[in-house]
Length: 413
Image 1 (cartoon, rainbow, N blue to C red):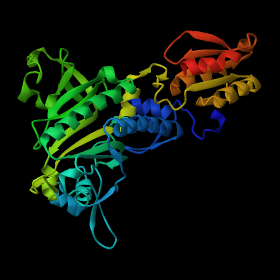
Image 2 (image 1 turned 180 degrees about the vertical axis):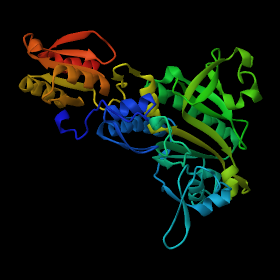
Image 3 (image 1 turned 90 degrees about the vertical axis):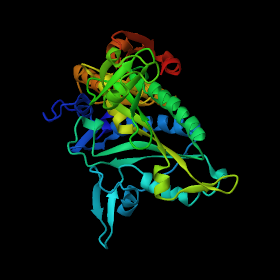
Image 4 (image 1 turned 60 degrees about the horizontal axis):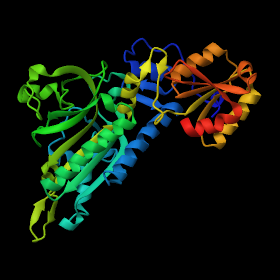
């Protein structure tokens, strides 16, 4: 894409109200636009990043979790929440139909997915099942803050699983833990993301979160570095020690973190509410055992910016960058055009800075946007019949002959 065609622009000045690093960099880079507190538009660059995070998550859900993708409504009948006793949740957005009828905006989908499954599950032969969606969620937060880490509207992947018994559920739950670790490794935050014990509420002794270490985090976790797990501060007084090795709580390392995902045993809590049952091999009615598994897509994007940035701007992982190459022309548009077409022909995603701007401004914007590879075509490089290539996170540059660009791209980009 030609950068001159982007309707968005980078900016140096943003509201002084913005305190979080992810908001500052994403707003300055033209990835998002703030419509109101906790509500953002994702612009072309930001939308491209979201879609790539989605793709990583979607492949893992389909190929590893063997879940089927659906899309459920964002508007829910309040009566379903009355059935489960969750109609008084303080973060629910309430609205009404003109013709009468109380509705809420979906903050999660247990009240939709269980009645849905009741139409299709009748026998043990119908189980297990897992379905997921990637959809906007709505939560009436008292104070939306921290950029896209805590919004009133946000993009989330939620998966719901249905099982005949706890053994079946436990096996699937373990697979979900492994699958989430795979996702965070692909997003390049795996080495900072910990499987974290949290309160299970009325459903089970524990639920589990995936917490990524960051000074921007609102959570506090206690790390057991021997087991490479953590405990959320909210339950540390109950457990006191590491749940796996028994190490004393006083010896656990305390860190701030961002919750980027969670997996939750639901037991038969919601199945019982809607009388969702199945017939076993003997024809006896039994409750369906459930689990839910969430990943904040937009929150993960914000967490990555918080963690993988420097004093110049964002440093996107190759797996989710909006483009692979930022091609910059310094007064040599005709030759840069040839390089642009070469790369596009090979299927390389290129943002071509063809604008009439100075070198300093172009380089500063390139660092801010954070595309993994920067290629520069200038009079100086063309004297060597070459281009200058630099990785975003490195200082050193390489000089690559124009006729070797395609091979370089195949091997590195």
